[in-house]
Image (tube, rainbow, N blue to C red; front, side):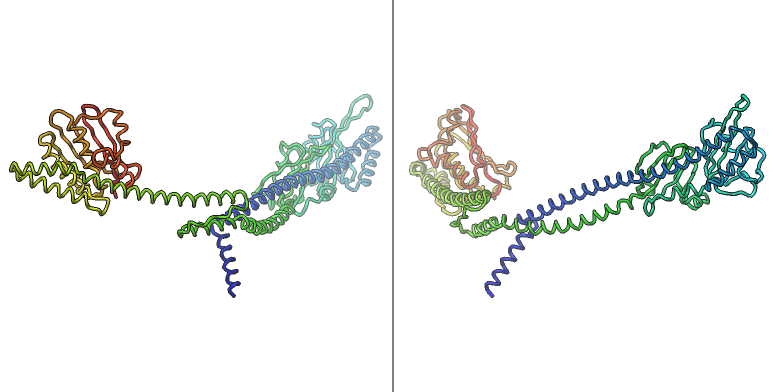
Length: 584
């Protein structure tokens, strides 16, 4: 049971690590899966586009071949009609009598079941001979369109649009009229007439309907004037129940192209028919042609899903193999967080993992080294404070102060004695205190004031002093005993060597998020060379705790960006700026 519990916990940890949203293993798994999915989609899309383009071209080419075959059949049929008209023309040119001509027309009519009528017309429009004994419907046919076209074409064949035959009374067949001007020489003179052959429309319908353009495909036949010769839904179009764009072939060369209509792509092919001004137009829905492509797309999609699932599980395994050493480093880091600094990561595995382990071990070493440095810094701070305490209890300063008190007592100046003793007691109380290394600004100013009072009594009128501070800064904290050493230096090295009375000014203000203390005197000042080296002086040889000791204590307690700044020129005095943090 215990082993099973441990195994379940390990599996749970692995799954948690794997599917953590920003986990390393999850990132690898999902990125690999996404790349695989994107690659499959790009390839599938490219194949589908290529296949669709090829299928479009194939559909257009196949349709072009089909309507080309229809065009050849129509051309062959029209050529037969034309050859028949030439044969009739040769027979009629002999002009052997109207009975003979009518016999030729009868023979032609009976030999070609697709021929409804054969007739000859004078150029005046009068019917001369026909293949039937029916009486003509009109005496003058010169106003008929087929008649005018024949004369205007000058012996070239002309074909009319489908129409109801209007030659004889009682005849209403649906025909296409072939008409042509014929000429012959007789008695040394040229004569001309118009030959008409009415062809049964069913023959054209049979030729055009033999082609198979799919479930929704169809073709139709138009002439150069945009008149419809044949359409599978011709009667519905004439009755207005259906419509067709008869201008699909306008300005188009023979060939295929794709046209969108009502949001659907259609393959449109155009092919001209010789011996006439007709054009065959086929229309096929591309969606029907691309049905195979859609099936391929569905099959590709199913395969893509299986491929992505397969890649996903393989990626989990590969990412787990890569992430396992990282999990080991993660566990070691958690132990380091708990304070165990004696552990080290094994430097084995892939190059990157070995480098990470080396960096981890180097980091632990650095942490241990920094901890030792912190301990050393604390020891240095403690020793610095001890030196400050020892230096503050300066025997020479105490001797001079006590000697001054005795002298004042002997001269009977009791008030000065009381003031001096009180100030010395306060000074020693703050100096000897071994508590918090920090005091308030108010306490530090009181300490400086007591020191200045003692020195003022000793030196008499050699200097005076002033203290200014913002009220809201008095309760802020500062490093203990930083002003006294600077005041001592100002008196000893600035005021004492000068002639005449000096002045020491102490100011406390806020500069941004920092506190600025300033000790300024109008003494003899310092040379630039001495100013640059003042913080490098040996504190053991300097008076009091030394300027360097003050600067080091501030930087140890507050940070490297804080400390002392000196501004001085010979004969113009010295200003010492003490930079402290706004909050301690």
